[in-house]
Amino acid sequence: MASSVAEYKRQTRAHIAGLQGQLTAAEHRAALAERAERQIASERDIWKHRALEAEAALKSSGARP
Image 1 (cartoon, one colour):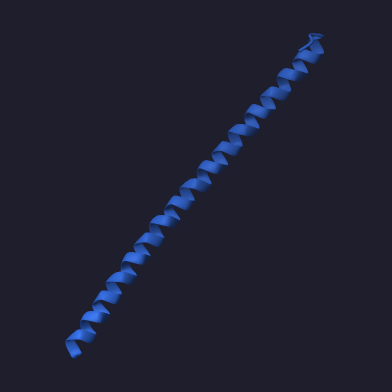
Image 2 (image 1 turned 90 degrees about the vertical axis):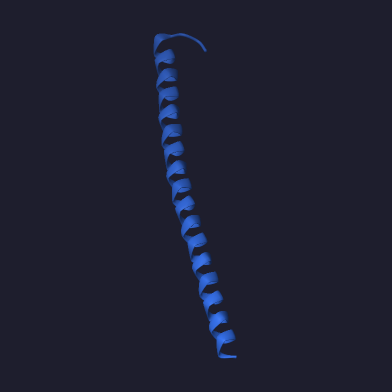
């Protein structure tokens, strides 16, 4: 009986270690996704600013879109 309890504890610890590894991997993927989201938002803002500058340049030159 003592060996079955010890085996159960070993399996439980191994299971917990596996779950912690999965959590770490998920946290890493989430951090990467957050960085990608910030990068995309930054690029979107740059292109929006460039588009506004181009529209302003067209208006000031008297050209019609």
